[in-house]
Image (cartoon, rainbow over all chains, first blue to last red; front, side, top):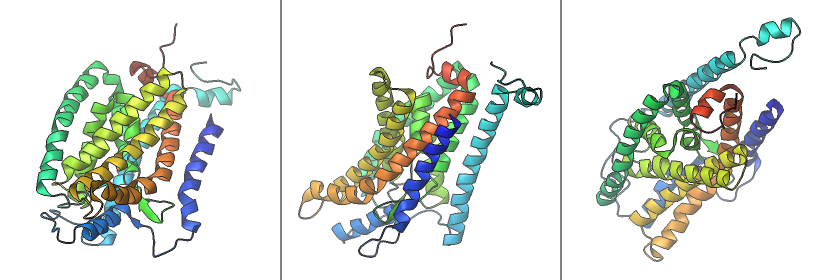
Length: 108
Length: 223
């Protein structure tokens, strides 16, 4: 199962990396799709004026990436805690089991 | 899939907010019920929310030369049902709207509808269908996560097409344009989300059997 999971993750990484090495006609440079949609709106309805603006905006790209990194880090921290806890609970004696040479986990 | 602040005409923004509100209210009620019924799954619930947090923070390059992000809503929808996921997704969208200027308060209703309602419901329905016809857990989870993700972006394209019909081709032409931006970019990302969600469920199956059994994802062992 572990090898299976690693293969799945490798495939996921590959799909994300391949586009970086493709060449694109025009000036695509991996901007956000949300921004492109905004540009499309301005093209379809040039007279449309947004009637609200964000209450607060990250003052720079740096701050914005800080907050995105924080979002991912918080989530990853909770996930890591959860998986570590459950793995420890599911295999509480695996260390001693390996040491004494008895294969298998607590559930047998 | 985040429609930016102010980028939906007021009647559309209000309409989507009204459409989303009952789902969110129902979700809050279901969430309370789920936690009372299976308190042992509380931590898994937090982990599902965390998964959604991580996934929606990752801007991943796509074959169209632009970047977009997975939604991470398929996992929670499969585990806890679509209504509970609606609440978690709404929290993520609110965080992004308030702190990241990503999405917005006026467009929150529309964004909740696509990411926290349509995505989870499509994911949940596909999971039930694939399991119902005898598909394996992994195949069902992959289909749920990948197509739930895609459904979110198709919904966003439709929302923008309804609000901004093309002056010549109308809503259909506009849907094609927004669909090219969102849905096509999203196809490889949907596959990525499907693969990662399968890995997460594999790890859960190995280490969190009691929780998955409580949530009826795995059959109870006859002992």
